[in-house]
Image (cartoon, rainbow, N blue to C red; front, side, top):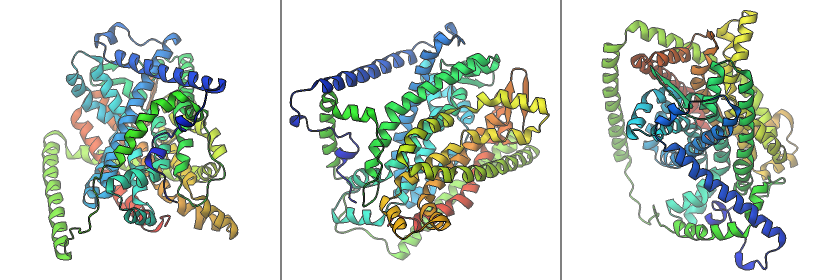
Length: 586
């Protein structure tokens, strides 16, 4: 049950170089292929960085074209933005989720803030960050690139952070006891036990976050705020132009390019990570079917990769010997009275900050917004909330049983994984023509028939998290239930549903937050000169963003954030506490 050293787990462990004799012909082929992959990746990074730092006038000199010959370079630019965004999301996740999980006081502030950040739509971030990033890098495309990367980051980071937080909250107690027995410092415990335990769920959520970023890639690459319109080379801007010109052929080519890129990501990044993370399963017996990856096997057998990773392995050993947050024999403990006094002071500080923020908000609303506007926006928020709740329930009924079936079969998951990634990455924007044509031809009600577009890109959060939960479910518990002949509804109710419930909560929370985000692009659809609108808060924010009315943009985003935070606080958080208290693998 104990985890292996970090160098064996978080750094790809390569077989001992000294134990290898003369290289065989097969090993030479491994070295050549691995060398080609590494060199290609480095050249690609260098080319991408050069293009991103070019003068901003280049955007006007080379406008977006629907010529299919440009799609490969557009795809490379989009892939680089998403890769940089997911790296930034991972760093944010490790720092933010760990602090929120380790400190009760910090978590009381950080988790509601995370709810707010999740509920703020991508268009809301773009509205206020483009100008700042452009001022930070004047005269360079890098400013706009940073704004686009930050927008993609906001569609990825929250899901990963919630996954990490959920894992840290539900770590088995015997792992804490083992860390205490071995006198591990807080630093060593995190890297040797806590992060490996959270790794399977984090990898699946990183995969989902990468796919979810495609959903908003159109908004991040084709930026329109008020009278300012900026278009970056990429698949998203290509799709936006194709929709504007009603060019179905270009849309088909964009879909084909997206499919190819997703398959590359699956083969070269996510499938190796899923196969590598199988060693982090928390169980007493080995899994019967382990996932495989030809890329991971190639890098494992390549002498070149062994040589490259050898200094990294040595640095990791030094890194883990750092005695940060080391437990001491004498610990400082507050008395019950002092602890209660400290809590009162803490809550007083929070209340004071809340009153100050409320005061400034009232001043802003009094000077810029009328009460009739607030009542109207609150009514629109209730309409969108109803849509979100109904869609989450329907998606859960479909994807929870399917996700469990897939997660319990690693071989099946290897085939389903790229398909699920493609479906999750498929932008709902490409279905707008279908929605517009169907509503127009059959005279359908947009308030009803535009609603499914909200969940198309976010339902996959539920599927991916359930797959992650089922994949991480201990094999010894499955064997025990099989030995005791626990079957049917009893198996679902007593074994599997409680086992994946914390993962489902993470997926449902992020799916609901994503649905609120998606409402902005789903409640107002356009195809050429035809457009349809569904009443809701998303349509309101989209309209105010297009008009450049910052006061009403703030009102719409603020109302969306308030509703999401209250809903999470009153509904999702109590369920999280139940999962952390009762549904742990202890």
